[in-house]
Image (cartoon, rainbow over all chains, first blue to last red):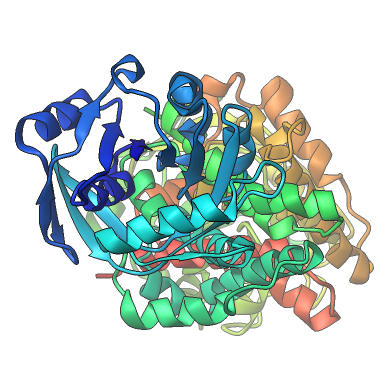
Length: 306
Length: 317
């Protein structure tokens, strides 16, 4: 069995490093960051923090180096999904490819390039410390299930889940993994851009009543869209917001980290995703659209003000 | 009617300096300041106005209202956030004066009225300037100032006309209204949106603000937020003088300030960039408050209000 991780940033590295521990599994890490690839080739991939391990996946920045795989795990930022799939499609001609990215809309893009698609959602988070070294900040489950319009078989999905569990990534195979995906989507769309737009850490934002009301308004729209789509959420995202305030008070949302570094954000796959699915099922999402426009405006300011 | 012979400006920022520098060419101009060196320099050097005007005006300045003599017209030109402090300083002085407020936003007249019996003129200004130093201001946009008697305890219409005539005589542009509320609300709705959106996105007032092609285009947000504000004005029975969306389109198209590279930086964005307390409570916050009283839903205003409040909080240690 052969697996290729597409996009080996923090999340991709967590998957690659764990899976590379397993015998009888060939793991490839594909990433455009040549320094990271060179470091993995020379010294392997090291994880610290929540997971401490050191393993040796194969790595390349050139898809031509990578043999055909049985599985793909896509972990790029959602705004790079299309470019990544375009260049790696040849590797996955007869593969089941699983997204573990943020937001919605990635499965649809991946399905244009590969025969079978797995809808995935993962909670662990981390950051790249240096080439070849990633720190895992939080643990948590991963949920995978078929992408209905172009599904992988449950047999494949269960096999992938089993290997992931064996490697130490707690994964559940499900007939319908949309609940997990939308729970995380709604949580992320309501909290990530708030950090990016205000500069506040999650807990501090929650403690500002005027800001907390904005978060709840965003959550309510997302929940309404999920309901209209017939998706049963795993848990109440508004309660998750409070829970995250308890366990990650000083956490700077990834989109805030993007904003501080003036990197393009994933807002189009988060708030933009909720808006698009809302349009499809006739649910109004004015506040998510407002937030989407504001973050796009902020991104534009990085070009025009410097 | 008694002629206006002396004017005192409180808050000599760009707008206050433009009033003092121009009106001082036709009547006695005085400035109430907070710093002794500011008073000294104005007393010694006067005030120079460049840009659209070329003036050099003698000024009498002091930190103490008691040293400024009789005053007929007080112009409070501070930021909305500083009106309370300004009114406290003139409390008990200038019993025969009327007060003109020229802030962005709602509610500054009420603040002034709590500190004295002066009749009040509500004014809004569209002119702009750049304050180069304590004694040098540049007159940038030579657009109008609109004024009218405050609805609650206003100066008479005749006095308002007299003040408008004085401002025009001084070389600025003014227009008196019997009821300035329609104009004030037009500008409030415009300002509340352009300032808060500019502050949150870090964008000056560029053509993006009128762009409405894609779902995520900023113009959609601006348009819908202005529609919300119009519902509030409507519920108050105010017929707007100008449509805020048209003001927005006009401002970014053929530009008060030309192309994007010269675009106007809204004052709230300036405040955010220098981490100063903003006027959000007097603009977007004031609309939210009115809307709640009236039961008009304003979710977009609440969102922008919350985000700017969050930004202000992010500067706290």
